[in-house]
Length: 368
Image (spheres, rainbow, N blue to C red):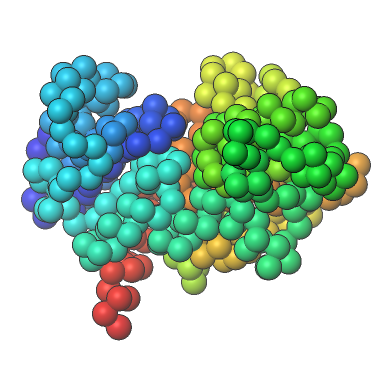
């Protein structure tokens, strides 16, 4: 696709060595369509770059095929079979990029790793910097930062793989299980600290479920979080802007056809639906919007974030659940829908994100 003279060269990078690889492809399809329509088509020369499941980077020709298919092409997989995994250098066209737009979810993309690469290149990019991305990705660090900022959360405990693995293998100590039960009770949720989209999360209603949840999570991540289960509505707020000018969207609510909001409920058609704006009192919406910005400030996030809450009407309690510093852009994703309901449609939102990235270029800060 030919670009207008003088247009900004945007590198859209997606895929990634993460369990959320497929979601990333879906998000990237939405983003590139929004950047290639209307006024954006005149402003931006978008060049997609695909990262396969082994972490290898592919040039625009392969990336366009991935986007067209909605999955990795077999030809690329077989061609790369003998190549070393991981980043081995930039493919053709990458060094001409003027601003990067990462559409990566989960480890190796949302956790500060690729943000560090772009920072070393002194090339601006959309989203949070290294620190905000890393803290926002790791649930243990995130919760500690929220706690330090005095933000309300449901009770939780942090665990490590070392506490669950004995010489004979997986064997949670009785004292540890009793501590979880006494502190959190049932039901509780067991979560890997560094995965998103509810990957590896399980709900435990008894001792047997707790042990199985710990077994599942520890196989995916050496750092775990266990949270008390609460009866609450799930609210979300989108945040946009540079650190000194963060803006919060209207509030949205997720309702789902499942026991809890797991991966299938999130990404299966008909399993969940959204209410925008969320049917809550203006005072509650205001509290959530203020807290969403405070959550970003607590972890050092900027650019774009989605902040999730639990809300109990019976207790009039609003708890901060988590922050997502690279939220999805699929057809079911809340982040673009929340901004559309706030008066910022997708194409304009993408333009704002790119403009903010260029105006708050972190690479220049390294030389000051």
